[in-house]
Length: 190
Image (cartoon, rainbow, N blue to C red; front, side, top):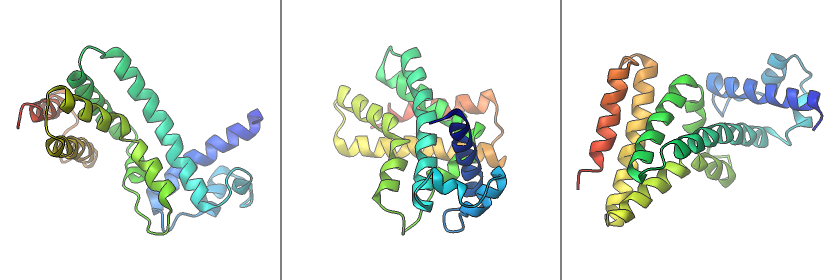
C-alpha cells in the first residue's frame, strides 16, 4: 500500500472508531467518516468493501493494538501464569481507560453482522482467556470453575474500566491496586 493510501486508511480507521463510539453500529455512517477525513464519500470504499468490512477492519485494528500491548506484558512478566493474568488484566484496564472509545467496539452488538464480527471481537480477550484456562489446568481446577473465573476476571476488568471512565471510581494507584488485589484473590477462591 502506498504511503498516502496507508495514511488515509489509518485516518479512516481512527475516524471510524470515533463514529462507532458516537453513533454505534446501527447508525454508523461511512459518509460521516469520509466527511471527518475530508474525502469524498466514495473514498472509504477504495479501502473497504462495505460498511461491515469497514467495521471489521476497525475491530481488527483494535485487536492489533491490544495484542501488541499484551505481548509486551507477557514478555515482561514471564515468571508465572498467575502473575501474567494479573498484569494482563491490569494492562487491559489501563488500555480501556486510556482508549475509552474502544469499549464501544468491545460491546458492539448487531444482529445483522455476521460471525466474522464475533470472531474478531473474541480475539480481544483471547490471550487473557487462554491464561486463565492455563492457570486453572496448572492448579487442577475443574473446567466449570475455570469458566467461572474467566467470567469473574473479565467482569472485573470491564467493570473497573467503566467505573474509572464514568467517575464512579477515581482512577488512582490505590484503586487500581484494589482491583488488582480483587482479581488476584479470585484465584485463591474455590
